[in-house]
Image (cartoon, rainbow, N blue to C red; front, side, top):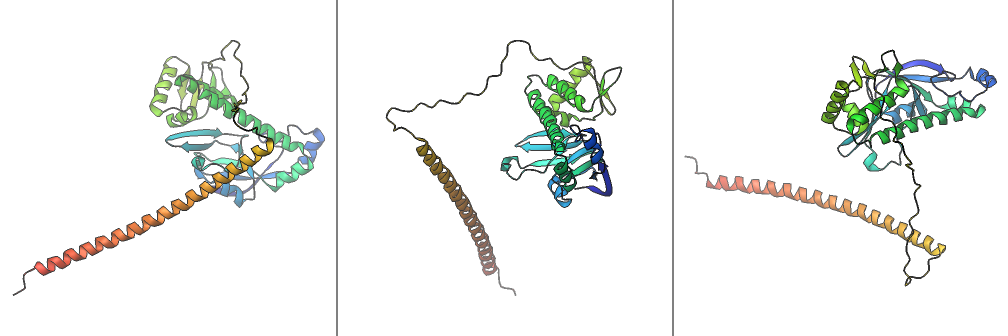
Length: 318
């Protein structure tokens, strides 16, 4: 984990934090004396949980730079880019084991404002600071949801173009030639963003460049063609319906108390089976260890027998 220890602070009223959006003028004037500590990350992998714990913080927000959060499942890697105004939280302890491979990395120096006792004190006195914090969370979740939908587009070139425009909504710069996206995205990064392999991304970028949709620049991309528009029509999103279970006429009626008992029995059974599985796994490990030791002893004994046999066959020295 690379960090630079600097005694730097930033006012809570800083526009990049977006925490004072819902405060009144008087509340902003009173909040002017509150500040948050700032830490600078150097390029490399970042252990967010350790970083926050060492500094007594429960979260952070990006001030400058881009943070890449990657999750790997099997052979597939998905990433989320976090920029100025986005929140960074420690990895949850309740995440399933198959989602535990989470890596946070920065490629350029990044400055973070830490959320700790200073923010808690400000929120205790001016509760609407929490409203601003929730607004930041909402914007971040909305962008993540849009990324999920983009990954479901059938054509990879459409995914790439839509993803670039999504990133440009947060970090793009409007110019006379188009919208400039100042992010040097590699083919691997784009593939992890849209759920595609590197060779497919290369073909998609070549197609978008040849048709004039995007232009590659030294420090990023210039976006010219707009992303695909939503389909028109009467498409409706139907809410999920509960599954109606058919009850056999031969089965006795189930009362709420019976359901509670059945759920408790099922929970106890699952817990018992899990404990039994852990015990069986440890027993198998012990057996494998004993077998390995026995194999080592057997090989040593066999080698000794071979040496003894060779010594008996050797002719006596004259």
